[in-house]
Length: 108
Image (cartoon, rainbow, N blue to C red; front, side, top):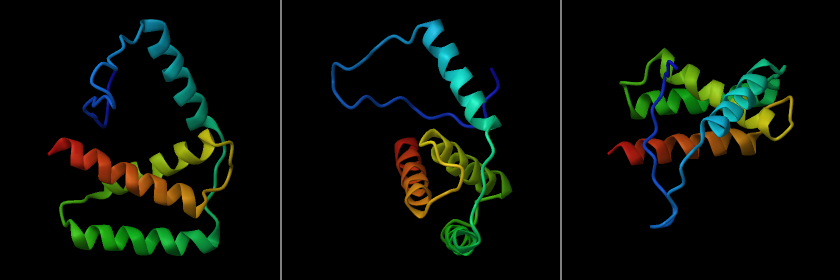
């Protein structure tokens, strides 16, 4: 399956390794496909916050490209709909930024 992003697995506990069955992987794929197909929006008040945050991220890391910014917006959408919301909240946007920070930290 093609992927735009690879995240190294990092268990929370030393003995927490679990084998993911093909059925579980397929269930996750279906879940993500369903989330992706749901309608979602970003309120006008939050659009300015996102724009400012994205500009700040770009200033901190000039290597960020349009694909990186698109990925953040996609992650925001997926997090939001996974909580049953049709509009992105500031809390979920901040959660996405933190997840991205943790992902980059794991890649070091």
